[in-house]
Length: 559
Image 1 (spheres, rainbow, N blue to C red):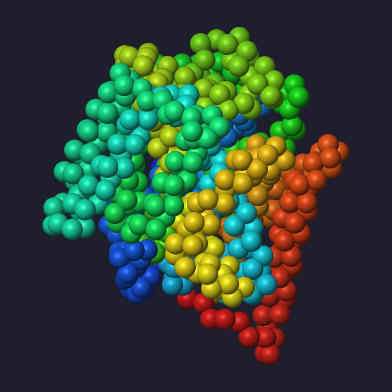
Image 2 (image 1 turned 90 degrees about the horizontal axis):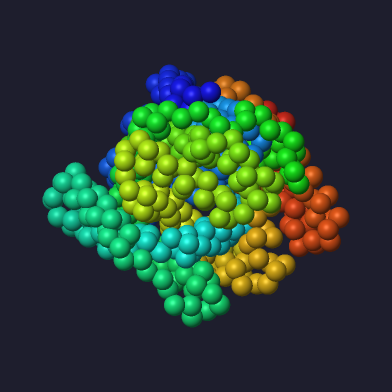
């Protein structure tokens, strides 16, 4: 099968879904009304609530949700064959991921910018809100640790990326000041910033930077610096660093994706990997674990946290939610798609692919995950566009790190919000302080990095994917109850919700059996807690729906 034909067909599906399906959802299901005053205007404070140009906000939202996960997940999942991975990326993105992201953003923007966890209290009940926020806190805690570790590993593995990635911070602050403190337009500064960034990517190939290890090894030392940076980024006004950094990254990432696809269409290589390879040595069953392994590339609960945590507070007009919520998810699907193709058609021969994916343990290592994408993408650039090996490899690695870094920034800010909301629920006033909440968000994940083998992020990773997808299912549950209460059709959120909850619960139960069998009691207890909390939230939602017609049953008003 020709990889270029598969890519073109899949991208055409994304285009058609935006043109038709997103328009239907906006008009008939989510009912966007441009006259609604968004939280960015209602609570404008210049720090978190900032009315933002939709193109800038699209850049922030897209780069925040498109972390390393839609690259890593497909790069592992193709071990079961390229066909199931590609189908899940395309169909999951259109009918589950985009519907989820769009809905969470709209629901939050219509209700004062509250997070999806906080809104659970308004839609379902106060008990469900506390349970939901606890699940979110746990998920975001892992996300911060894992993405910091991924970035630190890539800095160590590709020292040529250190200079261009870190120069982005200086460029971003400069752009933020130019945009918000002068009347200078955004187009020219962003083009100049992009040119400077690519110049530093070129310079980075000649000036690699290795960090002296001051805590443990080089990776651990990078982790410490990344957490310090995440703390600072989470308390700065969004216009100063977060928005412009993400805006610049969005240009870089779209250019990077564009040239990878261009190289692919020029080379038009065959899919050397098998379409189906369901029997994997030492591997997990493809169902349900395919849908857990490819998370963000098709559907991710984390996206709902971004949409309702930071993006909704910057939405200038509710009508912008369509391009930002639905459109950004299609962008992430495009990233997941190129990861599938780079990890299959990016190999010269079937024998080379089989060597890389010889077993589950071989495909699941950190070097293998990133290596398949980076080397495959660099192959398209070299063969299709004649770019030098070193530049192409650095460019792809910078793209991966940039995706991961923007997710780290946003995750820490979201965790700051969640910590404050939990502080309000349990009346812990110190947690509502912006700096204390940010410190908890940025530095407690160190426990997962330095907490020993039983508490390391590597041991927690097996339930990260399931927790992320379960959170997406619960967010779709909240959306379904909201739409039901508003008297609208719920089938477009209900069917994806049922699929996700069944699939994630099955995966978590199967994993729980292995945890108990191996004596891993930490993961066993965490799995039981997550399954119990999720079931409790579902029961609370069922109770709300059953009692809606009772005259003595009062429900909080929703917009």
